[in-house]
Length: 495
Ligand SMILES: *Cc1c(COP(=O)(O)O)cnc(C)c1O
Image (tube, rainbow, N blue to C red; front, side):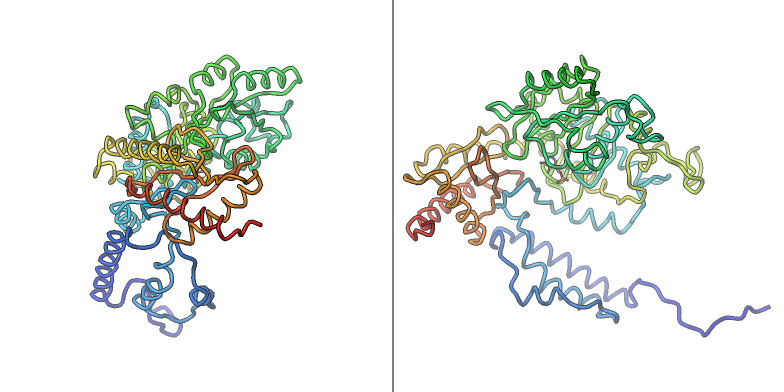
């Protein structure tokens, strides 16, 4: 019997019609990207996107095919020449990594296999488990901990705080929700902690009023006496203090809270200790810096990035949780169509990462971590981190030696805050001057720091997580800041 069938449309696929052409294009892409990476130092750090290009990046939806090579030509013309700049040796804005060459190729290999890392019985799952174990080893975190790779520090903080909230609520929060809370659940962090902490607290339904911002001392570390007093006061008022969020490397200045004392306090108070070590946690890879992080291994949960101070391409962050069962209980939910376990078939596998986070479908970000650690070894990452800290100290010394410049915070790790400071200007004048200076510096294409404001003073902020920077790059930065600063003063644009 023959089945009736509709008008014969040829069946289609998204695979290339001509594999030889696609292979040639692939080779061209790899060649172009290697050239691009190799010559990064020769280009400006950043330049604005020209109006004509903006126009071309604002087109209607293509309905008909253009061909892969024509699409690639558009990329080469309109996208590649106007980067954010963070792969450049003189980019030090916010806290960003450069990416690595093998990381680029790793993402291609990962996308080729395209496994779903939600779970399952396949090698990629084992690679992520291996990578999570290596992360514990690198940071000295207990090996029985659970963990998973996530998009970055923000997501790692959110998931860690969700575990903390559920673990310490004292009732079945997953089932009953926060409306069942007999008392307000309170979280404590320093006034210098990252905005993703507050975003996480808000998203978890706790409300930003449940996050106490404790003042910092002169070293920008959380004031532990003030913290202890706040906890005591809140308890006396009938609230439930549940968690301290410590910073291992604040964004503003790189300050590291006293993690051992915070762990002691949390142990005494029965509170959860979450450490946000987005970039700073990785300093543990340098033997000289590791003591700064003493106590980090005592955290109940630890969030950090691999795309900042491990220099890997975006996105890659990690969350580790000391008590794997508490971690799993926060996220695991297994409908019939996701039934898994046992030791046979595709649904086997001892760990399904979807039981430990929010994502079900997950990408194979573990591959770039795995390949990179094999390529370089963890010790080399430690040396590069130390190199970045040494460079930050070098920059601090250049600033301190210049009568035109003023450093505005201690340099603990890799973050340097400073400003151009000619005589005769008040604080408002200095702020306006340095704001203009930063824009001119970025527009010059010479270097790209970002900014922050410390005690009302606008500063240029260099956060060095750059494996391509050399000492001479900091000489260039300082020379450009001084030149542009004097130029602005002479043009009198401020009055
Ligand atoms: C960057 C950063 C984050 C957020 O991490 P993302 O990877 O950008 O999501 C959190 N905390 C600190 C201290 C950071 O520097």
